[in-house]
Length: 111
Image (spheres, rainbow, N blue to C red):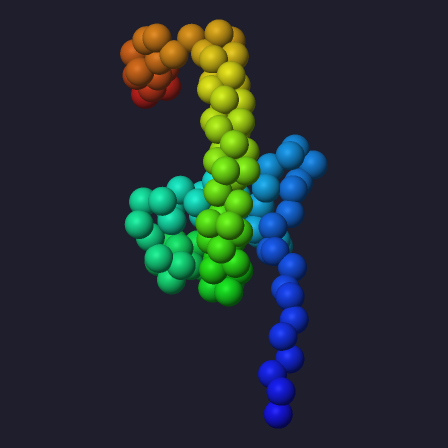
C-alpha cells in the first residue's frame, strides 16, 4: 500500500489588524516563536497554550525555521509597532508617579 503524500496548509492566518495568529486561535506567531527561541519544545508550548494542536505547533515551528529571515523581519516590525504604541500611550497617560496615584485613590476609597 502506498502512503499518500499530501501537503498541509500552514496553520497561520493574518487577522484584520495584520497580526499573524495560529489558525482558529488567538495565539500569535510571536508567542510561539518566542517560546521556541527560549528553548521550549512543541509539547511544552502546547502545555502553556492548550488551545494549540500539537501538529500545528510543529508546523509553525517548521515554517519559522524554513522562513527564518522573513519571520524575523515580521517580528521586528511588530516590535517597532509595539514600541511606538507604548510611547504614544505614555504621552497620553504619564507613567511617572502612577503607583502613588493608585495608592492615593485606594486610600480615598477606603475612607
